[in-house]
Length: 418
Image (cartoon, rainbow, N blue to C red; front, side, top):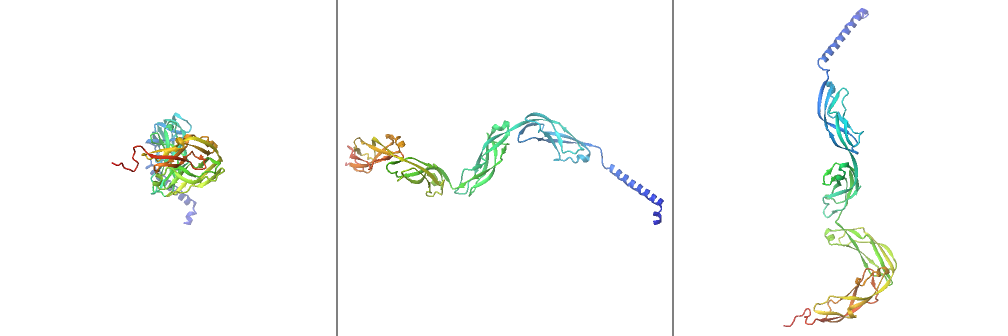
């Protein structure tokens, strides 16, 4: 064998035979391939293909596009056409270079293999592009549901409480409100959530608007029932003689009172702390705890700031003030014997500015004849005066009242003798 391989003629013959064998194998494979695969191009149609517009959606709105779908005619080899699958391509309408108005633009195929020829029918579309504008609106939040028994949902706070709504110019005037909803069903403590916002038109229909920001933070307090009402201070005593109150102010004027609903329903105002003016000879500022009444669980705020302005007094005499008798028995004549005419004079004291505004009709002098038997009686007078005006008299004033049966009248509680 080694002897043959050393022979160059033998080696040449073997190399020739091997080359012929390889050539035959290659021809055989080419013949097999050409018999099973066609290399001629073919056509394929795709109907109802949507158009994908490319534009700034924050600045513009497509009012109309005609047509909105097209037909595609594809040409290419079978192997290339098989690569065209749904989602691998799109028909693009480039609007980035145009502004508002009506435009006729050419469509562009995107995502197709380079070996596929694409024909779009129709090739151009007519599009109307409208500009968008912004409008700032307040946010309204609806509180839905009821918290746990005995509790009440308070006024929600919204952050931010105003947002921007972006819409096509032709629709901007139609937007009426921006609203969100928050549920407090069964809540036993304050509720805090991010709430999605929705724009509504004047008919209450939802609008497809861009809202910035799209959500807001909403906090809803959940507390015992509450009611906001005036805070009424109880003023007792007066400054010493020679000094008067020129003004008394308080902050706040109203408070929020928390407690059982049945108790709150009976309250028109909240009785605050007692303010004692005795001994005050100069103006004063102070803070006082308001305090909790019976079954009241919370007062907000819990303190009241008070300013009392004290000034030197002025005095003024008011003559001929009529005395009003109350508590009369219809079966008796009740008359004032003294002073004559049933009128008294009063020496009043107060801050000069306030005293100058007092008129006789602002003064009420009352004599109470309730439960008095027939006869002559000295009755103490009750004098009702405007705020911070006082009676300068050192002693209580009295009037003499004569009570006598009316002629022919039967005294109360007695029967006529038959």
